[in-house]
Length: 290
Length: 122
Image 1 (tube, each protein chain N blue to C red):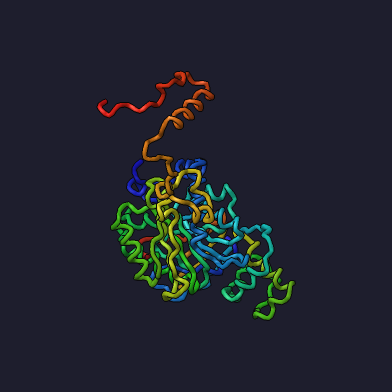
Image 2: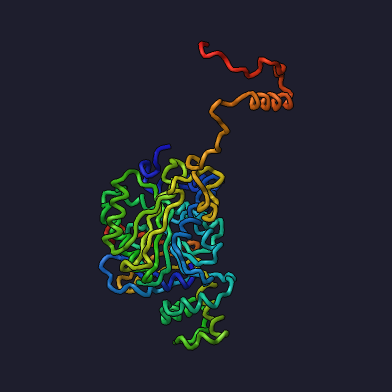
């Protein structure tokens, strides 16, 4: 499927039909929930049970907001597509919604937000959809306003699908210029399907708080659809199949020997297979000239 | 839009120095019950601009809030209840937000403020 970014501006692309499609597809809903769960985990909010005020940039129909609500947080969602926001209204999401363009800046008071997540949205800033659009300026306005509105030490986790390396470099550079510290966390880097890149940004000067978490599946753990959603405990004990020591085969100098052959034939017989009878010729040693 | 969000938003129009608080014009609003959490209120209190919240609450007809508040009042259950109601339970459905400096109106439809700027305002 071609990238939606190349087809139309977001407010046009996500029309009523597309917005409805997006939210009724159980596959997208599941993936979105999983990504936002992970983004919330990367946000590393203090685990004290106090609800926080978070931002969801590019909230769309509120799929990722739902995850935040489940964790008890209050959130403010930004989106540029009225159709998506209408779906969110129908779904009666708990957060507040704003129709706004992140490339124009967020327009929030300084230091009031405890964290921000954004699921598959920021890459839209790299495309100039109108003659007045200048991607670099829009990224600057976005990251500048994000930096201002976040509280000191707060984090922003932006999951995105960059089209190429240049794009992700451009996004990361603008974030660093705005004053953020941090970097990219890639989950399942070896899987083309499950691979997800998260930009984890910390507001304020670098400190012990701004360590970068490790991506899932980085040690070459296998990732299948079933264990993708498993939690960290499983992954620390997970072992790559190839590194597992092989079961030692019982081989002596003479090879496997008559005993071994008789045992195997017996096993086969028990399984009900047709096995030639044991005779004096069974597993006899051949002459060397053969 | 809740008053919490109103309290966070400021005008984003180009050249505006002090775009806060946006003047709230509300024609319809509803009240929805939200779970009470005192910890959240206590942590939010320092971030809330009280005069703006007080003014906005007056606009939507909620007059129980005191005109000024300080951190010592957070001990009182009664105060927290009022704070909670004003901050989280009043949803402005239709109306507008007006930039205090330029007078630019941001309409609110179905509870969603339209904060999109025109090209010349960026």
